[in-house]
Image (cartoon, rainbow, N blue to C red; front, side, top):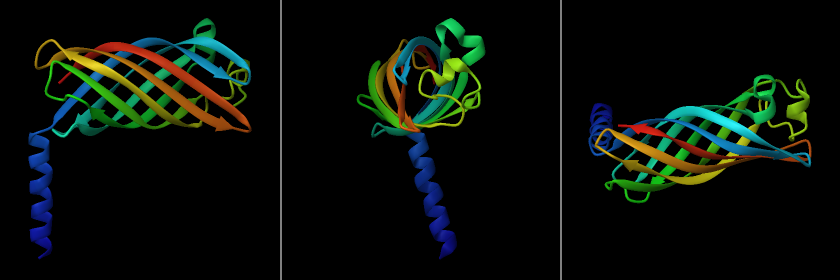
Length: 173
């Protein structure tokens, strides 16, 4: 009986993969860091991948770097994001989507850079919630462009930190 259950699970998984779309993307964009009563424009860049089934629901992962525009080399940090996606029209050339999930910052330790402390300790091992939306426009079956707005929020030691980003990039299937 156990073999039948395992075989059924594999069959369901592979049928789902056959009707799904997997895409990878790279992006760059401006944003803003807010926290502790301060704000600064920032630069964000990175890439990721997502898997969306034919219903439009999916999951993805993204790795990016962010930091204040005026002090990027001394105060940059990484973000690893795990997101859920909903593609509103997954079979069209223009595919609007909604996304939300969890992100974890890494890199600079808290307090090691005055620039980071000034923006609500937004780097160095913080947990973030994120929400956003955007679109992919597919020029062909394999190549497209993307645009997205994403907002990351966290709360640490009584201070709320926020990073919002406007992402522009390319997508590949």
